[in-house]
Image (cartoon, rainbow, N blue to C red; front, side, top):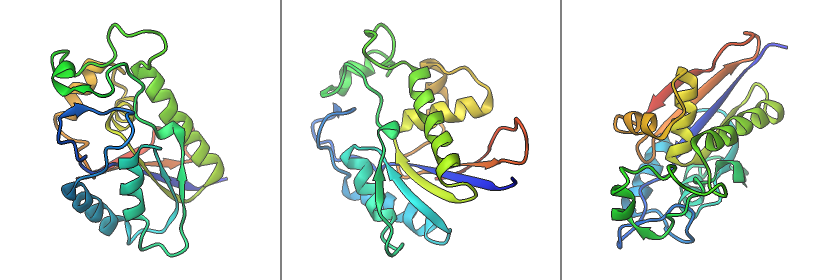
Length: 199
């Protein structure tokens, strides 16, 4: 069977974080007014495309972003998927200065109950496999978090899936509200997806 499936991974809008915490999977943390504007820009771009399904991380900031994006699509519903969640780390709720002192590496030296870069990538790849199974030949939007998108990008480029490699990538893109689209051509055996980016 020949078909093309596209998945647009949207990073949630900027977060309202007045105490400058590393929020991670902490409860709460809605998008800010700027985050809402970023979501509206993403909505306006995606509105012209034939989107068949909308997925979101369970985190409030991601769900709020996704709800704004799906507004123009009458009758559309939001599917919350744990595979799109933020990285599980021990630093949730701590001051950002704690993670900054680690050069933003939340993966080094943590217990086995926390995720490593490969774990996050595996979740992202499983989500892609599920979309290929459930939405073949369609275009899906998934609102998620920076690390998952960055690790998928590194996988696409054939680069190492590491925290240090992530830092080099995220300095240049994957900003809040940005759209990273992977397009998979099923008829091309063993081919990597095409990648496009809209900031």
